[in-house]
Length: 534
Ligand code: D5M
Ligand code: FE
Ligand code: ZN
Image (cartoon, rainbow, N blue to C red; front, side):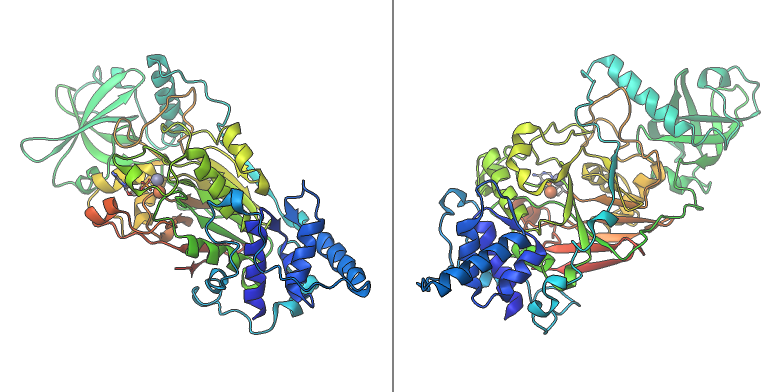
């Protein structure tokens, strides 16, 4: 079957270290003797070529014809090219075993492969390389190479000052605020408001809530009465988030009773931007190459699918962290490692990335399993690791980063703080089963990791890169290995699943991961379809 043939060609090229244009694959699959054509391409292509293009295939086919007419037809098969011995981290991609390609066809839902041969699409197929000039990809908030923090006390002061300044500016127009130090000198019984960081949340003996707000001048206590409508909001609060409170001072001006609370939030008037043409992005994360649980077959099926006509509009691939399983991330993790060397993990990951068509634009940020500092913001990979992954010319940026694809802004963040949001908030407001709802809270707080000192480690920088300054059109996270998406004030929140089957740890705590799914976003409508590959 031609589709399988195309998929097998991709796998075979990858096993020899090559990526390929979609059109080149189509041409190879359409050749009279694809195996021979492939072999000729591999024999003739220059050593420095990383991506096989149509002209390589055309040259090879022409070359081959000449050879055949010259009577040289040994008929040897190229079904299983050799030369993959130095790449044995990528299991059986080069095998002649058709199982590598079958995954592409039957496993995904709703998009049954066209029964018409791929050849008919041929080189004029309106593939994703039709007009690369229509693409645009911009990156903002990338702090790679910009880290200035040394972890000193002053750095913490400046990062929190910046947070309060920038998030406070979204609130100051909405309340008649006063600095903490001034409030205690105001007459008792007055109306008062303050913008600050949540310093502490405590329940009192009588069941009310005491919230300490801090600004640059000091702290002031605010009391939320248990029977007030805002009592419900108190359980959503995280330490170090920025908000505004409005209320009435007690008689001795020692405390204020909360009447209203304001969050930086996404304005309800927010209107997302969309692309001017039908183009799609695949949003994934948590590949975990190097783990025994990495799902080779699902990934291969996904990559094969990307080469089919059904995926021709997928022109961007965003990967939100945890490319590899890493080393020493959790206690006893080594017992579940398939590849124990971190560099070899990236080498294997790079081979898997080569299965993705060469004309798909890739952006990746690191996660907590990757080989960069654990504290956030995490800079993009260093040179050693970039060099391993040069084949695809991916954009490697920090966690978090704002990526704008044809006018559609996507805030990419790995998602470690989601564990915290889920742990702190009541189940109906944030749970592993509905990870997008946990993301809504980060949007409301306009910060990807508000709470300092818990799960999420923060590296203080001059500026708080974790503030969500501009409202994104799409918010993309991963980390919790659960697939979920939905809209919050018209911002599309997507938490991608993973490419790792359930680990022993996850089994022990009853986490049932969503493995082998690729959510695909239409950038012209912001609609999501989910492709399943496992
Ligand atoms: O995270 C995958 C998910 O599983 C995320 O919600 C954290 C959780 N997880 C996984 N392993 C552990 C251990 N050993 N302790 C605590 N939490 C864990 P990932 O970043 O892929 O490991
Ligand atoms: Fe992960
Ligand atoms: Zn993670």
